[in-house]
Each structure stands twice: as C-alpha cells, then as structure tokens.
Image (cartoon, rainbow, N blue to C red; front, side):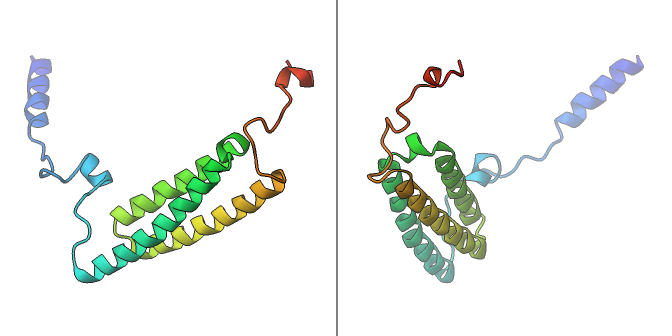
Length: 138
C-alpha cells in the first residue's frame, strides 16, 4: 500500500513542473532569434556581422585550398571556434565575441601559412600520394 501511495505522489508531483514560456528554453536558448534589441546593441551586432563575414570568407578560401584533405583537424578546430563565437553572440557576450573573433583571425592566418608551407602550390586532394598499405603498416 505504501508503494502505491509513493508512486501516486511521484506521478502527482511530476505533473507540477514549470515549463518555460514559448520561445524560451530548449532550442530557443541555443538559437534565439530576437537580435538585436536596442540601438547600441544593433551597432555592435553590425560590427560583429561585418567582421564575421570577413572571417567566414577566409575560412571558405581555406576550404577551397583543400584544407579538409590536408589538415582536417585544423578545419574542425576552426569550425569549433566559429560555433563558440555564435554561442557568445546569441548570449550577447560582445566582449567575448570580439576576443574570439580575434583568436579565430589569428588561427586562420597561422593555418594559411602552414598550408602554404605544406606544399608550394597548396594542398591537393592527392597530397600524400602513398597509400597506407605501401608503408608496410597494414
């Protein structure tokens, strides 16, 4: 009998939860769409947007230079940094966004130099040339 009372109490209490308002919570917390709010924030957002478009175009140029085939780990790190910038932007952490954009720009510059040093004409999809079985490892 005690067991049934406890189960009934648990069911009753599970129905007494507070759900967030529509648009607040779940995916709305991850990707809010109500940006920007006031005039000052709108100016900051426009500066962020212009800078981010420049960084995204640089990232696309690196992808066209076969960054995925040559240095896939670096590409994943750059994309992870891009996601961090988006999270901070949606959280309205503008100083953090600015700092992360500067770090992304520095990383893009370093990877562009390393990619250029890897091969004289850039990294091609057939860059390594030697299959793994030819190395005697398999």
